[in-house]
Amino acid sequence: KQEVTQIPAALSVPEGENLVLNCSFTDSAIYNLQWFRQDPGKGLTSLLLIQSSQREQTSGRLNASLDKSSGRSTLYIAASQPGDSATYLCAVDTGRRALTFGSGTRLQVQP
Amino acid sequence: NAGVTQTPKFQVLKTGQSMTLQCAQDMNHEYMSWYRQDPGMGLRLIHYSVGAGITDQGEVPNGYNVSRSTTEDFPLRLLSAAPSQTSVYFCASRAPRGQLEAFFGQGTRLTVV
Image (cartoon, rainbow over all chains, first blue to last red; front, top):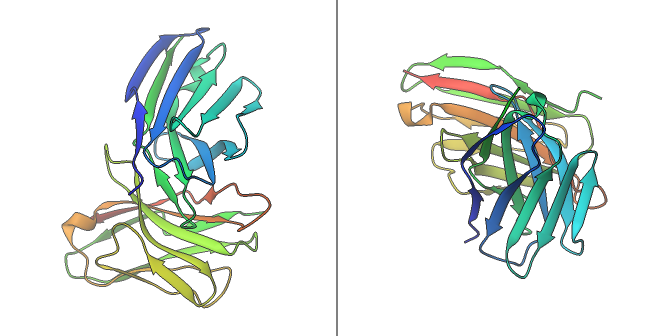
């Protein structure tokens, strides 16, 4: 059974800091990995999707990397802003047509 | 594009009552799924569908039923609500090929008293 773990569970940083969120998964036979953002009381917004054949994806200040063999992905946020405060979730697609999620990292960026 | 639409946004049920959570998508996605989100536990898969007429169980299917009569709609039925089903429910859809990104609705916050 695929298990997804996100570390740390919570993170508080001052504005402007670069930061890394970690995601690990137990079964390396994945089709893709997706990072989401969730604001309190809201739905999930897709940030980046990395297919199994890719090593990384970038969107603005966000960069996600994938190392399938070691079962790890990282989400790098450059020059963090208070508006980045949210919960970040990673999810893997193992071909069951639905996703397996981690528990998320709750990020607080202090102004 | 409306994307994925869930109704209602909030609902309070009494134990033993039944109800249907609605989910509709306008992106012609074949894959649809239902998740529940509980504090500290992430999202867990309840049921999913790979096309009209095809559904399958996820990780936590007990107490829930689904059907998929059209590509657009994927309702989730609670047969006899229990306090353990108090949660936030999310519906998602995505295409089986090409753009693989999953799109989520805004959620239904359900309280069973």
